[in-house]
Length: 495
Ligand code: ADP
Image (cartoon, rainbow, N blue to C red):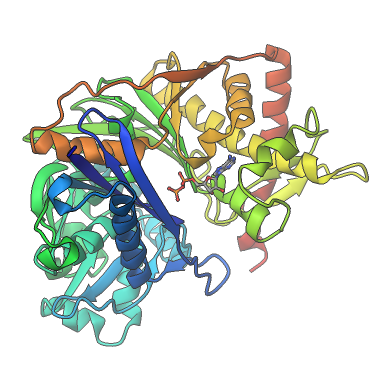
């Protein structure tokens, strides 16, 4: 019987479980979508029990598909949507509030106050991050402020805070382990990425008791064992990394200068910067990519909040698509957008704008505009946002990437990748297996247990090459920038 590494990939819209052979071959996968809760404009929540429940179902289904049992699993790796914040009771494991999702803007005003009070530099210096509602710190503060008695209980050590990796680990180990890894900790805005500790000054600033925080460990590390009740046997959990860092690892971006872009719910471009944390002058973030043994690798990151989520919106809220994949066929019905420009600023704009008050807009609609133009404009917007991030990455890192390695659900779309190659004037390379996030988590776990070695096996790639002229590229980018500028500050002006 073959042995597998089990990767649990807990994304923003779905929980996936994938079995890999130690040679990196995908043996089986299963995934379940779960509910997105929007209690108010700009607010986004998930039910933590549904997150764990769907993850368990996916895990069982993936095993069932190949007739595998716990005996066939060498180790488990976890990768997860980052920053999303959960607080639960240490004794019962019951959440005291829904998970506040990374996209949620409810704490934007508080973050503005921090900026106005001059905390930008100190926070950037300690955490590598820009002050924004996106990160966990203000979300955790919000829960402690708004759930009755929560802060007192946190002080008494009765509550646990965790990002989604920590929540899964706690539940998988039957409540025995309350820990996270460096990559996830570096996205909370409470972790000092130089000293590798929770930062006392920041905990104080956000009024967060240390007792609520998880232990922080390297990404390739034996965190604990799955509870016997779950699969009938204890299995080591030996790798954890936030989804974007796991994808960087899984794309084999282990050398400084290597870059990948993920087209998932959001879009995330990361560059490995080796053992040095590089500070951005242009709105990029500095994060920990992973820790292996005593060595810590850093990354520069550009974040696009709404990427594939805009396609999901066309499908679920607008009813313009039967499936996400259909976007390609519909967009191909027209040769360009005929001037229609879509700005997916549903929850503000990230790199390089960092404006929580920007809101979505469609410009340039005429009587001749059809569904196909709109769908194509949405796909194009995903590429424009990525192009903006690549531009600032070039400035900060002082080098142009030779190519862009891509992954994530929407990278299955050939038209999208061709438009991306055109707008960036760079070759775009998509591996045969786009489950690089899960593969990264599996690899970290396998590395820890000695069943995988570096460099990882390289899958074959499909390459997309630029086909448009410089003039056409510049014209398209100019139109995008004009449109993006006009969405800035929108929600603030209309308060
Ligand atoms: P996450 O892990 O963030 O939940 P995925 O990497 O699974 O996301 O990507 C899912 C996103 O990609 C969804 O928003 C979906 O609408 C979009 N998507 C999936 N397939 C396609 C496609 N063929 N074309 C465009 N978008 C797609």
